[in-house]
Length: 92
Image (cartoon, rainbow, N blue to C red; front, side, top):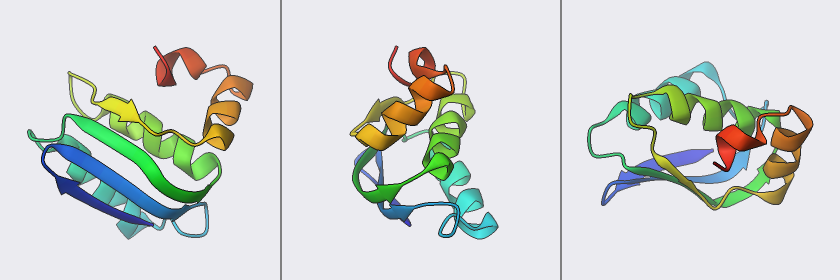
């Protein structure tokens, strides 16, 4: 998984799975979400995702008082959010 902040958007790409989201990767993502400049998180660059991506979505939503906008959520992650009954948090 890769992540970088550009122009107020945190871009996430690559494979976002339990195998690729290590503690170091997760900590970096969490820090990027907390940046003042991060107004949105864009998941459109994600190739493969599982429940680890759901965890990142929830991390982004709770990182600061004003939750960033979520963009480009993969269909598989939206299906998991519905299964976990948290889809209203992910797609308000």
